[in-house]
Length: 187
Image (cartoon, rainbow, N blue to C red; front, side, top):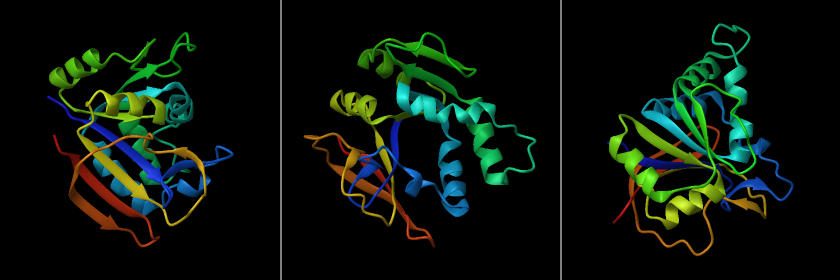
């Protein structure tokens, strides 16, 4: 049985991208990326909305033997390429990566069954897709990396009108000012 985790790198004011769609400020340092890689080792399946998938699919074309890439990037590349991916999209016709399938719509019962039968954890990404998972009561953990920047508006990490009780299970402050907060969703 796997758990469903919603992970995000946000600004202090809760955005994953600014009003122009820019998220360059969220690029993790090697220290943060190493920590993320360690969290991602337990993930067997990624659930993506189309836009996030189109960003993440860049990991498919990175080469594991490219010594020009930092070791932390090669490590994440291996983790991402080894995981299954489900992309929820009404417009994509075929995936651009291996181990990937397209679903036309988000089916909470199918995800509930996937959690029940999964040998690894599931990670959900993309604010609109994650909002559907939160609304269906499917998210078990929230992993939040808060960056020391305020962007003033843009794409929110959490949907409006979401009410959750959370229990802090882990926290860590990085040298660059990023703070990790790991929460379990109370049921």
